Image 1: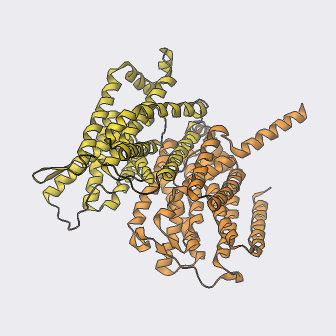
Image 2: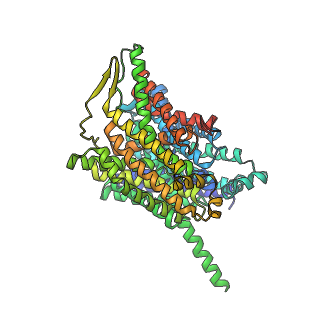
Image 3: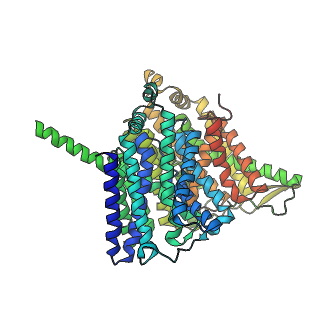
Amino acid sequence: MSNRTFALVAFTVALAIAAGCQLIPNEYFFSAAYTVLLYVILATAWNILGGYTGYVNFGSAAFFAIGAYTTVALYYAFKAPLLITVPAGMVVAGLAGLGLGYLTLRLRGVFFAIASLALAVMLYVCVVNWTFVGGARGAYVLQPEEIPFGLPRYIHLLFAVKVMMAAAALVVARAIETSTIGRGLAAIRDDEVAAEAAGVPTLRLKIFSAAVSGALMGMAGTTFPYYLSYIEPSSAFSLTYAVNSIAMPLIGGMMSWIGPLIGAVLLGSVQQFVQVTISSAWNLLIVGVLLVAFVTLAPNGIMGWVGAWRQRRGRGAKG
Amino acid sequence: MSFWGHVSGMEISTSLLFNAIIAGLLLGGFYAAVSVGVSISFGMLDVVNIAHPAFILLGSYIAYYVNSQLGFDPIVVSLVLSPLFFLLGMALYRVYYLCFEKRGQEALRGLAFFFGILFITEVALILVFGVDYRTVQTVYADTTLRLGELDFPLRLVVPFLVSVAMVVGLQLYFTHTFFGRAVLAVAQDPLALRLMGVNPVRVKELAFALSIATAGVAGAFLIVIQPVQPSIGREYIGLTFAVCVLGGMGSIWGTLLGAFVLGLAESFTSTFFGPSWAPAVSFGLLLLTLAFRPSGLFGR
């Protein structure tokens, strides 16, 4: 399937989901689905750098919060609508990814990983001390009273926006994966020195994917202040985002765009269920345990199982 | 951060300056104990144990639990219980080796593994102890020695002395015993060690276990110095790696020096800019070091 066809299909399906689900009478569905979609975006974005090149980003929460606080800052400064804050958040988060990548992607992968964690804590401290966006006390961001398309509540709109964003993230991830860039990234993952020797511009490719990955995570964050109408630093920078955006691609499978999607939908839904039926602390424990279990026992994730099963079946048919 | 009383009427007097220096040095000694384990695991063994702070917190909570139940001194408790941490470290390294190092997958999946361990420990501590801050009772907690204008709070001095003793002891151990030299040899060239008939995996296992044992002891220092809550472990990830990188990877003296640099930097930041900025210092220094001098301040 060419990229254009895939994009067409993805956006059509997304539009159908966004419109069709509006008929669901349960309000809770929208906030649960919103969260699952948020994780689809974060996991897909993380995988563009982590899965395709093997550089672990622990700072997903930082990029997410950059998106969220860009919205807050623009809201307080000019009452800017979502149509402006979404691209703005993407640009700022993308630049952050670019800067972090430029500074640390030349070093061994582990230094990038630690630096990404460092970035998250640094930005957290800066936001806590930045009173314009509420500082440690947090800030209120009111949902607009006028809701377009005649939707009954604002969460319906946020849900529709998230569906489209998720589709966009998947289209971008797949486009990168199937392009020359994607092959270069895969070469870096397999053997960076050999890739460099073969003429792959490794540093430029890594920085590029760090920027794209950051921008998509920022995009996921831009709607966050509207979701609860309230934002404070420790929820925006929550380690939960970082853990989930690593766990989901690992559980789903990191080799292609479909793995993070599967991982996010599965793990995201399980979390929504556990959060309601048991408690949110247990829910986090489950994510951690699943992450460790998959990484030790099934390092290629669910898609790895599928691949092995296909291979076995293929061999069986031939022999 | 609750180590410091922030100075509001910003008068930069000499006594303020000297007290900031003393607080920084005392804190630096503690940071050396916190980071020396990472210097061993990350610097020498090339095992990127970002879950190290989780074991520090585990040590804090064990010290807290024994202290609240039986009233024993937390630092003594941690030293007595350090063999347990040693065993835990051995088990953890064995899993890490079998699942990642042996398969050559340590880069991405090993990191994710330790990140998962960090997260699980934090959530488990929250489930058991809740999110309230916990403190310990010690005989020296409320005493402050005064030398003229200078303050020496014992809740900083005692951990400082024990941790410097521990770090210096480790350095002597690594340079003066057969096993210690084997660890240094693993750090330099595991293949050569194999040729000499020593099993590098076994050496790494014991050395990693030693690094986790230091985490348990450092945890007791932590809860003597400040109240502890499960999620503060994250702040120490940046700190331990900053110290480790600043000091030049895998050098114990470098760790001690790096820890003093960081302690002073944090102390000055919170005295003159306010304590809410202190956590940014270690991460900022780490980012700067990584960007401009990845071999460390004292590296070759």
